[in-house]
Amino acid sequence: MTLSLDAYWMPYTANRQFKRDPRIIESAEGVWFTDAHGRKVLDGHSGLWTSGLGHARPEITEAVSQQMARLDFCPPFQFGHPKAFELATKIAALMPADLNHVFYTNSGSESADTSLKMARAYWQLKGETSKTRFIGRQKGYHGVNFGGVAVGGIPANKRLFGEVLETDHLAHTVLPENVFTRGMPSHGAHMADELETLVQTYGADTIAAVIVEPMGGSAGVLPPPVGYLQRLRHLCDEHNILLIFDEVITGFGRCGAMTGSDAFGVVPDILNVAKQLTNGAVPMGAVIASTEIHDTFMTHAGPDYVLEFAHGYTYSAHPVACAAGLAALDILVEEDLPDRVAREAPYFEGLLHDQLRGKPYVSDIRNYGFAGAITLEAKGDEPLRRPFDVAMAMWERGVLVRYGGDTIQMAPHFVMERAHMDQLVGTLADCLDTLQ
Ligand code: PXG
Ligand code: PLP
Image (cartoon, rainbow, N blue to C red; front, side, top):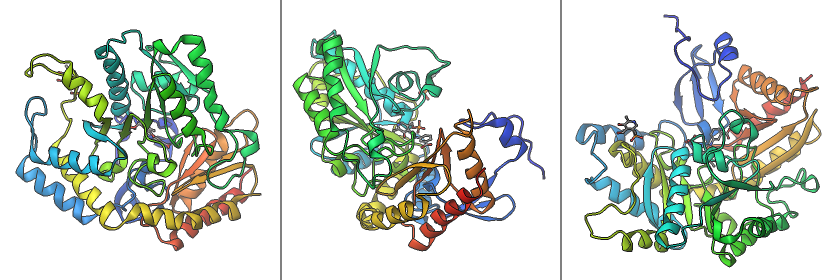
C-alpha cells in the first residue's frame, strides 16, 4: 500500500520537503524507532523530549489498555474519577516546596496559557487589578497558543500572528563569553537585573508574572547562568511579581533532578509540565500552583457551589492520560531515573565537547543533564540550512536528532546506555565532517 501524503498538513514541518522525501516511523521500542523500510533508527531526542523512560514501556501500555476498558472518559467539569486524584497527589509529592495543587491540561501550550490566566486571575482576586502584564524572555518557548506566543521570544514563531497580550521580554542569556561552556555558564547572572529596568519602565503594579524556562529547550539547550534564576526569584519577591517556571522539558528528570527547580535550587510560584508526565504516551500537561495561589482562588469565590477558576479543557484529567501518568511516574521513581541522569550526564557532556568541538562550522556546544545542543554557523544567508543538512545525513545513517533554528539538539533517554550515546554523538561527528 502506498501512503497518500497530501491530506495531512503536518505541524512544525517543512511539508513540501517532507512529502518529497518522507520519514515515516512505524514502531518504537526502547531507544529505537523502526521506519517504513524496516530500518532501525536510534532515537537521539527521546521522541520530542517526551519519552525518557524509553518507548513502549509495557507497564504504561498495560495501564492504558486497562483504563480504556474500565473508564474511557469521565466529564472533568463537576465530576471526577479516582486516578485524577491519585495522579495529582503523586505529582504534588514530586514537586518542590508547597507546589501542591495540580491543574490538568493536555499539552505544554495549554499549560502555558493556563498558567498566564491563573496568574492574572490571582491578582484580580487579590484586588491588584492593574497587574496584567507578562514578562517573558528572548529565545523563550512557551508553546503555540496565543498567550504562549506572546510571552515567547522566538521571532519565527511570532511573526505572522500579531500580539494579543501586553508583554515585554528579558534578554536571553547566550553570551559570547560563555561559548563551549560545559554545563551552567559562569557569566550572566546579572542579565536577571533587566527585570529591575522593566519594573522601572512599567511599574511593578502592572506586572502579573515573569515566565521563563529554567533551562531553555527549544532554542537549543540554554542552561541558566550560575546565580541567574536566584536573582530573578529575588527580584520577583522584591516587587511582588509571580514567577512561573515552564518545565515542559525540564520537568520529571531531564536535568538530573525531579524538576529544573530542584536542579537549579529556585522555587517558582507556578510550575508547568507536560511531555515526560506520561512519557509521551498520551497527551497530558499540568500546571502546579503554590498553596498561596490555590487558596486565594478558594477563599475569594463566594458560595461554595460557585466556580473558583472559570477554566478547563474537555480532556483535562482524561482517565487514559491519568493512567499513563501514574505508570510513567512510578517507573521514573522506582528506577531512580533522575539520579541516573545526574550520574551519567558527565559522560554525555564529555562526548559532546570532546567529539564535536573543532568540527566544521560548530560555533557553540551547550549541555546540562541529558540535554545537549550545538550551534552551526550560517551557510551564506541561510542559518537553517546546515542543521537541516546534518539532521538528514543522520537520518540516512539511522539516527534521529532534532533540528531547529541554527541548532541540532540531542536528548538521550534517561535509560540510554553509553554505547548508544557513543553512536549518537559519533554519528553527529561523522556527519559534521561531510558538511559543505
Ligand atoms: N513550553 C516549553 C518549555 C516547551 O518546551 C511547550 C511549552 C509546548 O508544549 P506542546 O506540548 O504544546 O508542544 C514546549 C514544547 C524542540 C521542541 O525542538 C520543543 C518543544 C516543542 C517542539 C519542539 O526542542 N517543546
Ligand atoms: N469549541 C467548541 C465549539 C466547543 O464546544 C469546545 C468545548 O466544548 C471547545 C471549542 C473547547 O474544546 P476543548 O475543551 O477540547 O479545549
